[in-house]
Image (cartoon, rainbow, N blue to C red; front, side, top):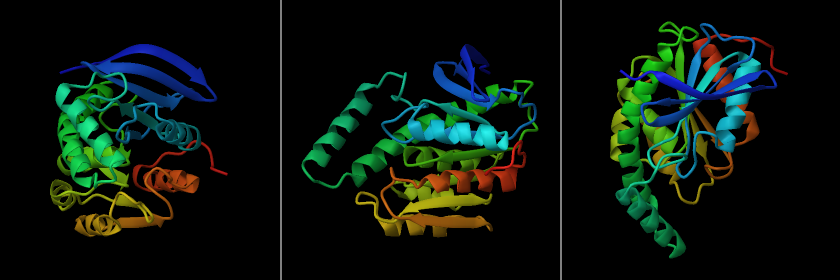
Length: 255
């Protein structure tokens, strides 16, 4: 079993930020500078082509920490951020760029690429969760949520379908393929799904089919204008309030 090895730490504006590694997987842990014992832990999966400190991850992490007292963790997906890309992943990226430049459909390529990445990332997230729960400030009793977009959703669906420690999840903007529909059918916890209504690359109907496939008794669909990389800022707080309802804990009243 791996443990979390902390490599760097900074603190500003009420947020304590620590770099860590679990095995060869790098991550970041954000928590209230005033202390976070027993606070809910929200795992955040980044989008394809991005990394653990992508602007969207940072914005959510800081908002969740300062407004709600959550602890937030993110790791680099295989071949992303500080992790080297293998030859097969490089071929997928080249095929994706070529198809996009030629105006050809990219959905099938991304679905295959995301499928491979997500399957590799799931055990890494489980090892990370094991390591974080071994920290006294988190422990095994802290409620756990998961949030992600695109690749983060593909990974999160597969992870949440088999991981009973996750008790609420927020997803969105994903290229849907059969394995994700199947995973959604095994998810019964409360979920929130963001659906970019005007996405030119992700079919709207597939998002609706994914929402319908969730076996959760409590599920909410948030449709908004724009593409999957144009999530309205107010949705950041909507997702935070979703986790607050299902995970608990707040330190300051949001404005």
